[in-house]
Length: 305
Image (tube, rainbow, N blue to C red; front, side, top):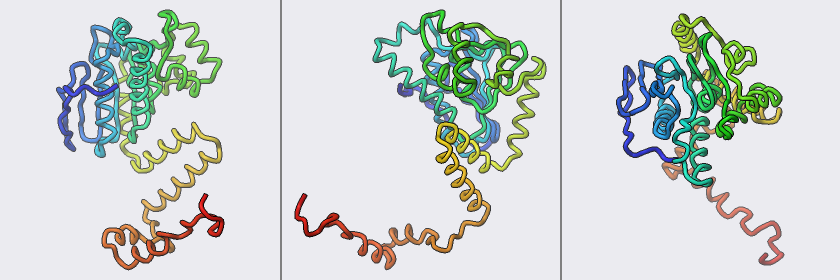
């Protein structure tokens, strides 16, 4: 799914930005904090095709931002998100076109999950279907006590496409994922916290302050350490133990480098890059040694293969 060319967001500044480029979401930046508000309150912020395209666009914008450190996603009108807009599904097209659109939604969730910023879902009202899938791609979820959640797709005769089974089974296991998806019930916020789908449930009146307190703590951290931690946790969770430990080992080396211990005696401190740019003696020596080395194959006297 491609981003509509009509969406042209303004260039962000390091200070305050409010974007009017979107029809169905509100985007604001204030220093290192970006806030995305899903803004279709008349439809409980259901993910229409246009809203989904706009959300992909803004997430890709955030992916490329070096100034934003924390992203908060919420919904307008007292509801987080009621999932995909089912009334539009006949417009998705044939089976192949549906798969292409779901590829776009998966890209949206993957982009959100892989942002090198701390992401927070601020949930009130309903977070069902695609709305719940958004929360599962975020780093933190804080919900109002009155919030409800679930995966009711089964009663529409459809299946989730971008996290309702895949991310969920990795978060809470196979048995509970079957319960949530096959029965389609709506659950209280407290159960999401008990199952570790969400981090914290607070009194409805305290939702705003709870999110602001988390932002304050998050911004106090060494942001390079935060980026590395998020990277190795997300990727290590999908890897075997040895590969995950390799991520940790490389991260430890990078931590040492960014904290000042970057000079390794038998590394060349970028002399190779400078050599390429200047075509100097080091570059010419290395390339002259390597250019035709062993290019005659493993058995020089055996003739052509």
